Image (cartoon, rainbow, N blue to C red; front, side, top):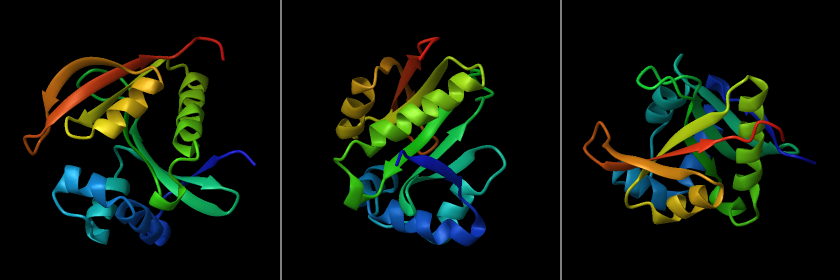
Length: 158
């Protein structure tokens, strides 16, 4: 069965927390601690600015995705987070989830997306580059971390 998306809600937020906390390396790079708290995840995922989704395989929650349809700073859609649960990494689910995201964006008439990768997250840089994202600039995050900004133009037909 192919992957599909499901909205993250207040009632299912604890599942998103479990997925986030299965990736302690990312949490250390992003937040300088291995675990996040439910209140932080609620602020990140249950806000009106971004779309927050579970990545599901059959009835199993295997990941989370959070994106902004249009960043007011550059009028581009931004994929803020695509994270696969630590137990499900290495099976191509991240690539499949990204392909589904790109397909959804194309259906909405959008043909590019941007992402920001923390400089220290080399594994993520390799992943996004393998999917065709190209480095365009370096920026600073709100907490002073260097962020490499990448962009991908989607093929018009797929």
